[in-house]
Structure formats: structure tokens, C-alpha cells
Length: 593
Ligand code: M6R
Image 1 (cartoon, rainbow, N blue to C red):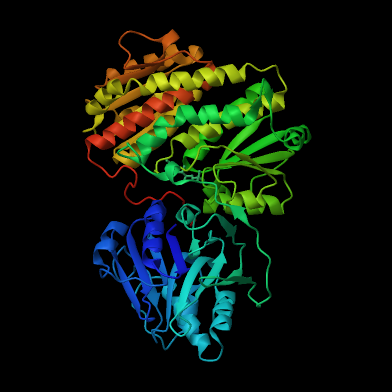
Image 2 (cartoon, protein in one colour; image 1 turned 30 degrees about the vertical axis):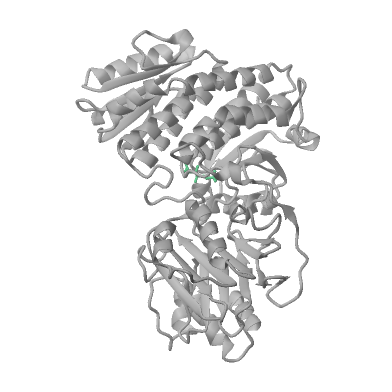
């Protein structure tokens, strides 16, 4: 978690870094800080608990200069407060650092190598900067930083300024993302590509265990021994329009409304006429496996459930969905010949990366389905499919779910080789999504009815249950209402004990085979005082239902029901006046385990 930005230029480094930090706040927003060097090489540090907006208020007006580094924090070691906020400074005040990641052996280093040093914060970062000071007593600055890196265990992207060489930003990178963009007015370094927009058109995505020196007009990258390394060059393909709010009050609403366009974009990318265009090697690789293990976290994991459904129904390949955070610490018994499919919007989720590395070491084939083809996971996996959702800024994932599910439906169709009507189904899905977006007023009315609830339950069976899981995650993460999803058949095995007078229970009923039974399970909760709501599909609807989605192919219904529940979560949080795009305690990319 955390976002870091550095800029080495002719001038205006403060603006470049603040602009970058605003764009990286989705990675954490517990505190923010910046170090700025003025044109006469005086370094000033500003930091505090809270958002970048607050940081801007406390920076001395008119202060600017050619070099700056900044940080936006998701607290791991120590409370979110001013002392723990980055940048951190070495005891002799020569070195200043911002860091994203976690140093696993920081206590050991503190008590062995750094026994004479003072520590002011609770962070692991202060250990890095003081270790650099420790080695600088014997070595030049570059060697000191490289030797320090060899002592660190864990993940880190660091930007370091040395007051004695004030035209340089020193860079370390291991296991958390870091990019360097080169521009006419200077060079910019950041945890993600979006701060680069407007400053660079090309960038390099740093490999692990590298050291770099960035000045206004040069970039040099070496390994920890100082051997020069060649680096990849990529095009910055995101534009400002994709990441600005425009007419929307929140990114979440913007991203929900973008969903029809995302579906249409996927059709244009993956269909040529009626033919599906997906890498032939990838499609034929499915002939050599007899099992699929999906691995993911959060919303991506709930999307994976639909992948399992598609591959089992259309391709007859047994599939399983595994939680990446559990898989990191377990060794499942593998008897089949599996393909591991990873789903990750960001491609930077720490648990998923750890599992992907383990799977690769074991020699199993891997496919990543992602919104970030320049990500760490994309660089590791054998195959990669882009979900073309465009930047997703809101912490609550919405359009990525839809894009992942649509991409998997196309892939499963390609693998099954069956004559496809999928393209028409997807075209009509985009239209029907728009119909739902046109009925927001109904959903606002439902949100009014649940906003004061202490708990909410979603129920369903089969794919309606899977849609319920995603719906519950959306509601809880942005409205802070305790929301759970249950297979309605499980209610009587314990959960129904939680039903009290006026507890909202929302049933999702879009499948012919389970519609009747889910409705009767809902009636059982009503008998115990629940306030019931039904989201149904037109062909199975009753006049009393709370929201009726248009008819759609039965295996695509979650793509419509989640649009309703995304909006329900959104309007509930609006009613409660909450910070929708940046819900408490969360960050967009979970880059620590
Ligand atoms: O980037 P990823 O898809 O790997 O992220 C997985 C989860 O962290 C993410 O889906 C999270 O659960 C969202 N906040 C859900 O809205």
C-alpha cells in the first residue's frame, strides 16, 4: 500500500509531486508528506496525518524547487499520525526517504546494526534511512544505499535524497511497484503510471532488486553490485480524461456508469465479426490441462466464481476458486494437471503475487486476467488477458468485476469452440445495463430504506448467491453497515438466528431452478420480522419485487444484478454522507500481505 512520487526537474517539483500524490491517494490516505529542495538547495519537509489536501495547506506558500519526493500512507507500522508520516530523516539529517512496502527484519536491524541510533517513529522506514547513514560513514552514497538494500528483507520502493548530492533522487525497488517516466521538463518516479500523465510519454517499469539514480536529465539503473542494467520502455497509454471526475460527484458513480462502454470495448477488442480473437496458443493450451484453479482476492475472487461457472458449463473443465491470502500459507494437494488463472484488477495484490510466484516455481501454467498489463503479476504470468476497463480509481471495485466476468465468458466460449451467440448477448447486455442505470431513482428509494440498518443480509442460490457475495462486499465496504451474503439454504443452519425485527434481507432471484426456493426462504425471514426486498429478473418477477432487471441469458444475470447492488451501496453511502471513493481503513491496491 502507500504511494510515492519523486520529481527531478528544472523547477516546479512541488506541483509535480503534489499532483502525483493526489492521483495516488487511492493507495492509502492515512497521512501525507513531502520533501522539497529549493533552488538554493535548502530542503524542507512537510507532513501530517490526513489527506494530500491538508498537506497542501501546510506547505509554505511559494516554496518550490527542482527536486521533491512525496508519500501518501496506508499505515502498516504505527498509527496514522504526524510522527509516523513520511518522509523520514536520518539521525545526522543528511538522508531523507519515502518508502512503500514492509521491511520484515527491521527490528533485527534496529537492535544489531543501529544500536546507537535514535528512533522517533514506530515505522520500519526509519531503519532504512539510518542504515544508509551507518554505511555512509565508510562508503560513498550510492554504495551505502546499495549495501543497505542487501540487508533488507521484505518489500520496498524507496526514494532517497542525500543533502550532499542535492540534484539526485536515489531509487530502490523490490517487490512493490515503481516506474520512472522521462519528460522534457524533468524525470518523474511513481508507484503507478497515472502520476506520469502530463510529465512523461514513456516510462520504465523497474524490475525487482534494482538501484537507480535519477536527475533532471538522466536515469541510471544498476543491480545491487553496481552493474549497469538495460531497462524496458513503455508508452504512457492512459490519458487525463480517463482519470478526471468530470460531471460526476464520485469516481464510484462514474465507474458504474462506464460499464456499458466497458462491455462494448471488450466486444471490439475480442471479436472480429463473429469470431473471437484470443491468442491461439492460450486457447490451445487448455487442451493440455484438466483442471482450473482460479486464484484471487476480494471482488476479483467473486468474479472468479463466474469463471468457474463458465468453464464448467461451457468447457466441462472442473474448476475451483481459491482465496489468494489462504493459498499463500497452504499447499493444496494437486493430483490433476491444472491451469492457474489469476484475476486481479491491479495486478499488484501482494497475496496474489506471492501465490503466482509459488505456482510458477512449481511449473504449472499461469494466466492473468487484469486491468493492468504493465503490472508485476503481468510480468510473471505465462499468459495475460486485458480486461480493458480503463483506470479504476474508486476503492470499491465495480467496472472491473463486470469486465473480468465478460472477459472470462469470451475466453470460455473460445475454449469451448461452440458456435457463439455470445457477441449478441453481450451487445444486449450493454443496452440492458443502460436501462438499469436509467432507473436510479428506484434504487435511491431502496437505499433510503436500508440506510439506518445495523445489519443487512443478501441471499440467493447458485450464481445469485455469488452475485450476493459481491453485493454484500460492496455495501459493507462503503456504507460500513455490517452486510453478509448467505446461500439461502444455509439460513436454517444457524444464520436465521440473526434475523430481528426490521433487518433488511435482500434476495436475488434470477434463476428459474432456484427462484421458488429462494423466495420461500425469504418468506421464512419475513416471518421472523425481516424487512424483505427482491431483485428479480423480468421473466420470474412478481409485482411486489423491489427491482426487476431486464431478461438476459441466464448465465449473464450477475452482470446486471451487481449493477443494481453497486448503486444500492453507492446511494446508501451517499445518504450517510460517507467518503465513498476512499472508505475508511482501506486502500485500492493491497500491496502488503
Ligand atoms: O486488484 P485486485 O483485483 O487484486 O484487488 C483485489 C481486492 O483487493 C479488491 O477487489 C477489493 O476487495 C475491493 N476493495 C473490492 O471492492
